[in-house]
Amino acid sequence: MSILLIALTVLMAVGMGWSIGANDAANSMGTAVGARVLTLRQAIVLIAIFGFLVAFLQGGYVSKTIGKGIIDLSVLPKGDASLIALTATFASCLWVVLATYWKMPISTSHSIVGAVAGAGLALPGLSTYTQIHWGVLRGIFVCWVLTPAGAAIIGYVLFLVLQRLYPRIVPERHSRGVLRWLIILSGCYVAYSWGANDVANATGILMGAGILPGRTSVVLGGAAIVLGIVTWGYKVIETIGSGIAHLLPLMAFSAQLASAINVHVYTVMGVPVSTSHSIVGAIFGIGLVQGVRVVNLRILREIVICWVATPFISGLLSFIILKAITWLWAMR
Image 1 (cartoon, rainbow, N blue to C red):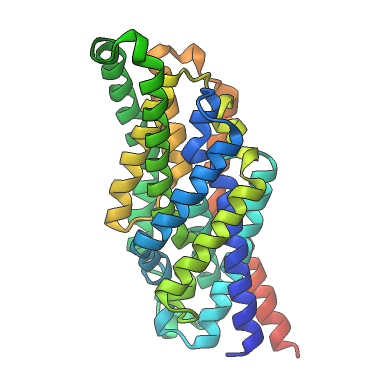
Image 2: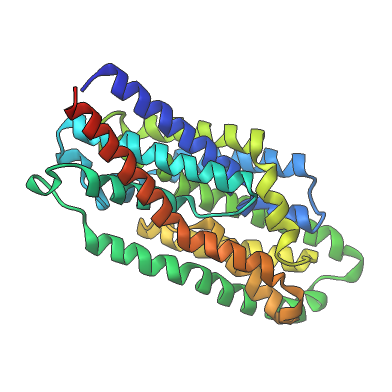
């Protein structure tokens, strides 16, 4: 395995981490910004701190699924494993960057999983020493479908309950201050659950391919995510914060708490799910309490189309790129 191939793979993993930070930062504090509880700068600082903290502490759960669950890169020849890692991170990063430019909150988990599978299908002779674990992919797909639905249900019930109980529990003169802190704390919890789940999208294949040890990979991915947050994270925050529905402070708190609980459960299970799906599902569920008229169905439709397209586009890109690389190598 050449030093150049290793260096390029690590570089693309860093690029993937950067794109994750740019696209998924909105999932943590976008609702707080939309509800005008935090400024954009304050939100970015909090996301960066808590996202990196949990990436370091709990980022290993989902990394094992990305690195070994879809294709067990550890049993492949080092050169082939690195080639899959390089191709998958490049294809996934490319699609996430394009979606971020369009201000679309897509699933970076969908993107990297689709890219790994696409690269695996393109690698000549893969079936001789391993195979794509279709059962794992099916399980991940089912969780992808359940993620927004579960978040919507949790958000709907949570907001319905809080809407009635909160005014009775908290005196009106303290309501605004208490709600502000609840939104900030729940946003930090979302950032925590997001960092734990999504750092694997950048570094899981580095661990699986044996390029870097687990702790080093997680720290590198966490740092790259922070860089993406502070440089380009504002773009999708605008869509999450106010594009789907106009959020009042209590709605923002309910959405963040529902999303964080939803994602955290999957993280502990080791399943790479989408924090984008979770927060958008939660906002939609909360919007339904107020009536479907408050939900921007046009934006929601565009987001869902991007969700469905993401694993197929990144998988196709990965397949084409790896096929081109192996063809050019054979022509030497």
